[in-house]
Length: 134
Image 1 (cartoon, rainbow, N blue to C red):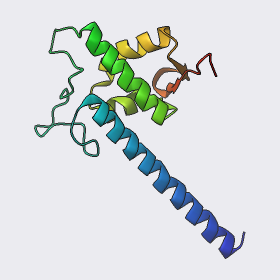
Image 2: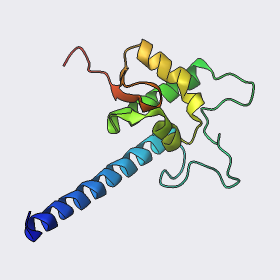
Image 3: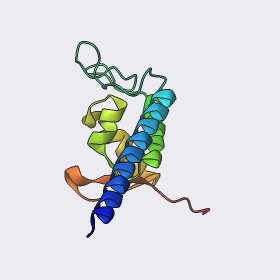
Image 4: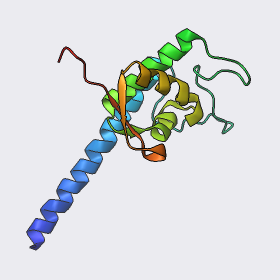
């Protein structure tokens, strides 16, 4: 491989990495806008360093309403559509919630066949299901 080939390959890799980060940032901003939360580029943790600032997380010992679960499901589908193959831990980080808070909405979306999954355990990647009309 010549120096020119290496230089071209490096530039292409840098470009792909930059584009991936821009797409990820756009997805975070879109989800933040859908959730009505400010920002989207910063840490999902609040100023005190605690999680749970999302309106989708029930108070300790409380339950989420059907409407809250539906809203969270819609936000999940939006995020998965913009970032196919995203894992639950990445979804939780992007949405500023604990991974366990996504278990029920993800389970419901899988049951409704709105999303599909590939892989097992922590390596499970989620994708938006193809519509029957397409």
